[in-house]
Length: 228
Image 1 (cartoon, rainbow, N blue to C red):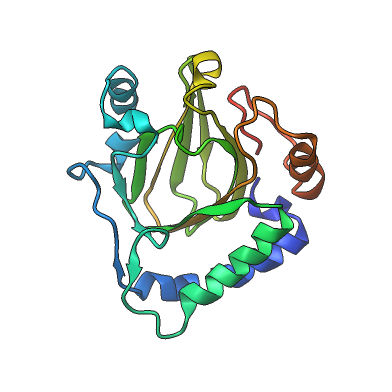
Image 2 (spheres, rainbow, N blue to C red):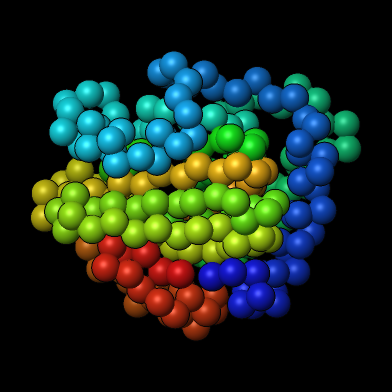
């Protein structure tokens, strides 16, 4: 879902969050180090890297990303926040989280131009995920792949706010469903935050479906279980 289609209640809060993004760009963050050497944004979302990981028995099979270039406030330490930018943003995120019956927040990240999160599948934190992302110019791409279905999906960013919901399958489920491999790269600033709505359900609970379709107005469901 692109910005023009987001329901007013949510868009008003997102616009408040957006007002803090210029300050976010200036804040110094002691981010977690990537467990691997840096790679290019293009390679981070490539088929070559994906199938190397899918076919390997490496540590990435935990579900965590092995490659990333971002400032992550979920795990990093904020060194400068004179205007309480992070605190105010978190308060606004909580307002959205409570409205969508979120179990918990799982992401709050600013990607710089050239930023990325490499292929991973979140099998370690399964469930229905709701992702809000802001793109400065729309020059970014989110890719999704299910290894059981051998199906790729691509979601280009649109300038401003974008909303989608993803289904991350657990290690146990994945034997039948396949993993929800996904990756993102951007050539402009991109701010993302997300919530975990449910534990591991093969089928989304009726309340989750109603929230996604009736409240958030996400009408399209993909073969890989994404709502957009």
